[in-house]
Length: 425
Image (cartoon, rainbow, N blue to C red; front, side, top):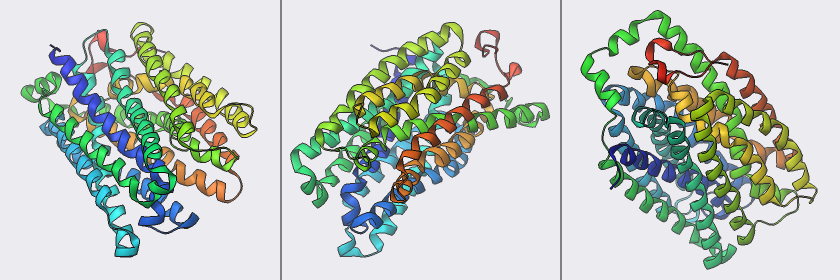
């Protein structure tokens, strides 16, 4: 029987699986549903990718509104509410009327659903990071961070497997004809199961201790603490840029990148993405355990350096036909493994418990929205202009920016015990 810490970890991870399954599946299904829900051709694809970006732009607002609630009433309630909204949104996407039947109303409904899901996921991301940080056992915090963020990767694996299954069953034409609805319905079922798991999860003991001690207001009133919060929030915003750009370029946009450079995006190439993601999962567990021994910051920095050095050559080789897309994806994602594994706890521990969810959530979701959520739309616009090969250069520049931003991080020593402190530079 799993321990209380284990149940908390799996409840948090299950939600991350669903969040990512829904988000990635939407992006991968855009070429198939845009003709029905929006309009045929490139215009419909661009508008549908705009719906992807709008959902990300709603995340910062969700991190503030629901993050405020999570810092006052607890992490568990926000995680449960966000999962219910995401699951309901998946079912709604599966049932949306086509543009032929409902006109522009179908586009409006599509955007509305994505905004609501964006609000929920925006709160969930930072709440999960805070929850894992506060429930993980001492000495295994970075390992737990890697496992929890591994839910993001597992959700993507399930997404690619689901898309491959849909293509195998319906074929490309059948998927465009309405088979895409099945994928969103599966997301709704997964979300319902994750919501049940979160019903059984316990509240964070660290949050409960602070709530009982009555120190929340004292922490908010300290001017020095707020200066530190602002500095670390800026660092989180910049450090997230390289992670999210490289991840969404590789995991979400790679099939379209391959198509624009003359490759194929059939079921076989879709399934080929599973191997890089499974390798990434294993490497995240390994680098998380390593970070527990040597510190999060060195692991985080080294991964960003490797990402900056690898992305452009890997994508150039794909575009020239010298490297299979799945192998390029493996190389880039392997470089990102360390930063992805450590980000949850590394970032969350920069902020005090009473304001942790909101203080982490706003810069995190803003950065993901600006550098990640809009990346497929931005890359597709580059492709329409004939410059799709510039997309890897943008991701590389973001990785360099994130690497430089690690110098901004300052440890809030008054908020942590010695065993919790972030290792120095």
